[in-house]
Image 1 (cartoon, rainbow, N blue to C red):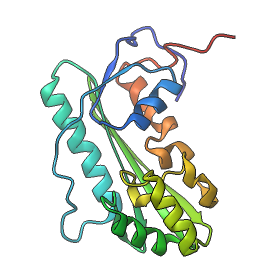
Image 2 (image 1 turned 90 degrees about the vertical axis):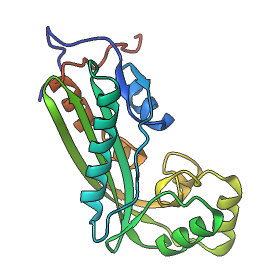
Image 3 (image 1 turned 90 degrees about the horizontal axis):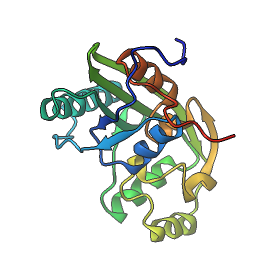
Length: 205
């Protein structure tokens, strides 16, 4: 897939069906304008639902909800979750949950699944990227110090690789941007297929 702008690509913003400032910033790094209009959906996993199925369903439902509210726009929905031995780890919501998650992840490898769906003229286009992250062993003091920052409260698995928890990352196999919240290579390809240009605002030399 070529990233060269096509004659019929648009330079108008797309709708980002997410409140995540990280996803908006990631889109900006590839020169894509977007307008954030979060989609309110039920994010509860279904009984027996596997992590890849869950994140793909969430991304699709967010994009569909956004498209229903903005029928003439191109809409992007995305979701990211952690999987440890097949169990889905979402946002902790409390220090107790975040503590349990970090204790479980300490010194172990886990999967980070990031799905994206773009709804537009080409229909519903989706991709799911799975990366493997290994955290260094974390003692109680380090976990408590991190919890005190409040950084991981709204992050899947209770930590943010792009923030202070970058000091915990021992190994990453896969896509860094996907772990942050949006797989940029795959997203760029989907946007181009939907007629949305990337590199709309390239950096000055």
